[in-house]
Length: 52
Image (cartoon, rainbow, N blue to C red; front, top):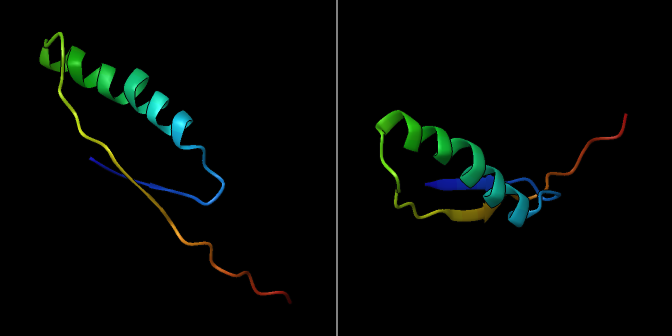
């Protein structure tokens, strides 16, 4: 699983949400007690905003 994080995102919070929500729903849907997962985090580069 790949996660792209915004520059202001906290990696720990993103992983906690992934485990407590998305993966928990997937485990429930499949009926498995454990669902081995590997997450790769990558920060998205900040893009400059234009001032008008």
